[in-house]
Length: 152
Image 1 (cartoon, rainbow, N blue to C red):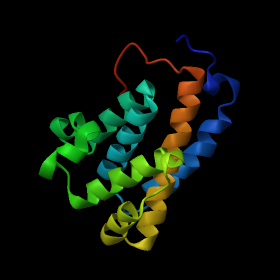
Image 2 (image 1 turned 90 degrees about the vertical axis):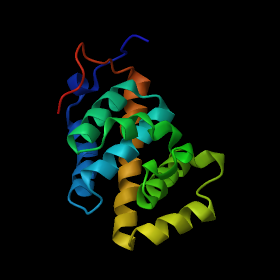
Image 3 (image 1 turned 180 degrees about the vertical axis):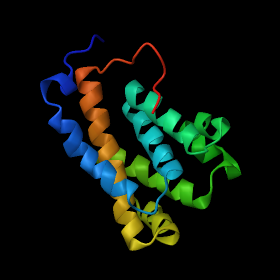
């Protein structure tokens, strides 16, 4: 698909608005590595290449090994590659991203409650919501990848 519009050129304030959600999450206790994994998984589901490019690089910069990044889409089958905390966050990411397919199952919520305190759950929900907004905006307008990989 050819890029339909450049949101940054039309209204750069939208980046500050959505970025405020990201700023809230960054001040929390989830950590940049976990947030990057959440962003990668939602972006895979939503097929947002621009966001995948960016968040894979952010994951590497946060110290996530390449093998783990490569296996995010198959985290269910990756055994102990992912911690229980990461698995709970990824399950919630999938359930919230695909919320119309049955909501958030009780077992997913129980796993999240076992790994995160209430404030962290709010931070996680906001992180998932924010990446879904970014994905939907970028996929809809066809935001094109740059000629080089994303570099933060």
